[in-house]
Length: 127
Image 1 (cartoon, rainbow, N blue to C red):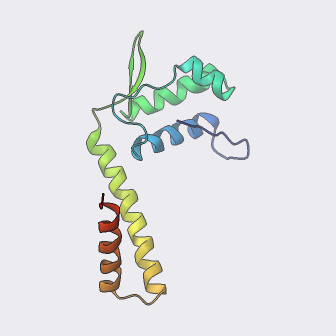
Image 2: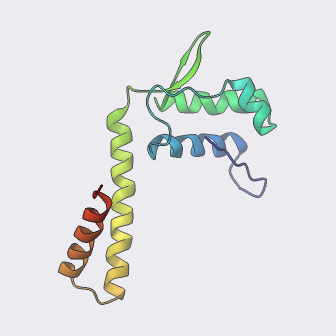
C-alpha cells in the first residue's frame, strides 16, 4: 500500500490518508484480513503526527472498512463485503458510462461496443 500526501490538496492530511486506504480496499488491492501498518508506523512512514493517522484509522473504522484489534493492530474488515461490492459496482458503472459516451463520439453502434467488449473479455480470460 502506497500513500502519497499532497500539501497542495485542499483535503486535510487525514482525509487524504482515508481516501487512499479506502480506494485500496475498494479496488481490491487490500483484501479482507490484510493488516495495515500500525498507527505509529504509518505516522513515521508519512512523517505526520500520530494523531493524524489515528484519526484516519478511526474514520475507516466508523465506515466499517477496517477493524482494530487491541494488541494486534488494524486489519481490513471482512464484515462489509456488500458495501465494498456496491462501491466497486458504482465505479464500474461510471467507467461504463464513460465508455458509452466515448463510443458514441466515435459513432460506434451499440452492437459494435458489445462485440468489442466480448472480444476483449475473451482475450482477458484466455490462458
